[in-house]
Image (cartoon, rainbow, N blue to C red; front, top):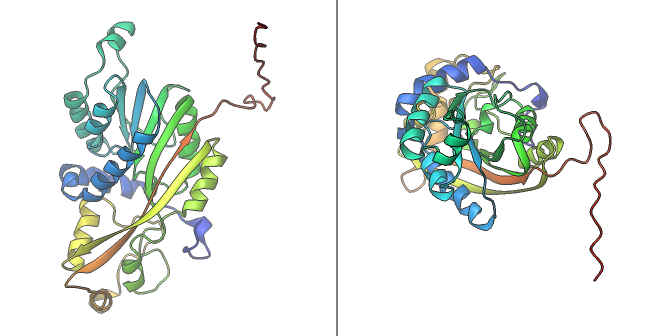
Length: 307
């Protein structure tokens, strides 16, 4: 799956029930630990300065508490905003924010007989309750780490985008939390969440049918006064390790003491580092070249009128 993963990378999987429970519990205090998401959201928004797009409907996929919705509403004031997440308490908070920050356009409401599309959805990224070609932009800020394999979700995003629609996303690369991974005692199982490599993600985008994917990577280093601060942020945001093969302990007090000592040796200028490999990218849904049953699509353009 990625260059830093062990040899059984293909068998990596997440405990999705545990992951959902953690995000459900995190909803009430999630905004306390989303500093990284806010910074990445700002950088994603800056990328849109260089992209010409006027979407009519936008989906914030993996919306969390909906903190990105005001930014999207400000940039695309005429668009209908939708929010989706697999954790119902997150969606409830996002829905409240959506109603407050981005009311549905009056014209759309009249065209649909007073019944605009539902503004927020409890849904898996692998099975979106949205029509084919119904979205102009899918925005997804750090949702992909909650997936075993991004390909099914990318195929579903591709299905729901209209031709010419855009996927704008961010995720974490395999060097994320490398200090924590190195300091925890080696044993069978995944002690730190595994993240997909940018090149594998690019292959998945192409495999899902996207065209012209553009991605870049940068390193963001957070610093903490102590290891407990890092662990607190991971738990508060629901981002603690949820691998199916995660160990259920850390070799008791001796294991924790060894891990803490190893991490303490990394201290610089009074702070402990925590690396995040940030991957940002976008890709377009181009006009299809074949039908769903595999037949080629041939498009005829009228000849220019002779002068």
